[in-house]
Length: 347
Image (cartoon, rainbow, N blue to C red; front, top):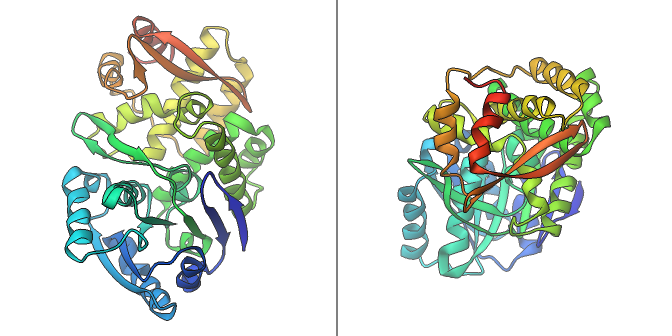
C-alpha cells in the first residue's frame, strides 16, 4: 500500500484495500457510523464487503443507493442524502463514504460538504476515471439541466481508498473513459507517460499513482481553481458541452478525449502547438477508441460553453497544448471562441 498526501487528507493505493477499509477509516477518524452512498451496479458488487469491513472495525454502516449514470447527479438526490443523514441524526464526526465512480463521488461529496456544514468524507473510487481524477482535489457538485456541475463546493476528503482490485470488474467503456483522463495528464505534464501509453508498455497502478501526484500537486498550489488548476480542464470545455448536448449519453472520458483534439487542432492552426504533437495525439486517441462527435455544430457547442462556470465576464480560459507534456492557459474574449471552435474542425 502506498500513501500520497493530498491537500487536506490521504490517498491510499493498493490491492485489496476494500477488505480493510473499516480499519483504515478508524485510523483517520472518530466515526462511529458511516453512510455508504453508491450506485446499483457498484453496490451489488462491493457494498456488502464494505459494510462487513465497517462492522469489523466497530463502525455501524448504512447505505443509500442510486441508479447508475449521470442522471443521478441531481439536486433531488442530493436532498435525499441530506434528509437521510438528518433523519438518522448522523454527527459531524461520522463519515459519508462515496463508493462508486465520478457521479457518486461528486454527489456524495457535495452532500458531505453541506451536512452540518461539513462531515467526514471518504472517497472509495470504483472506476479508473474516479481513481485518477474525480476522487482527488475536492471538487463536488450536481448538474442542472442546462450544464454540468453548476452547483457544488470544494471539499477535500479526509481519506481516499483506491483499491485497484476493483478495476477487474470495470466495463470496457468505463476503462476507456479513465484512459481519457490519463491521456490528459500525459499531455499536460509527462511526455514519457504519453510514450508509454502509445506503446502500451505501462503498469496501471504506477500510472494511477503518477496521475494522483500530478493532481495533488496542482490542487495544493491552487485549491479553489483560480489559477494553475485551470490546466486540469484540458479537453473539458468542449467535453462538458458534448456531454450536455448528448443528454449524457456520451460519457465524460469519451467527451474529454474529443475536447482535447478540438483545441489541439486549433492550437496548431494558430501556431501555438507543434504540428507533430497533433499527429501523436491523434494516434494515441485512436488507439484508445476516441469517437467523433462532429454531429454537434460549433454554434451548439458555443451556446453551451457560454453557461460554463469557467466563463468570467466576457472572457474564457482555454487550455491548449504547446507540445506533448506542456500546455498553457490562454485567456480569450468570448467573441474569439467561435473562431477557436472552427479552427478545431467544427462546422
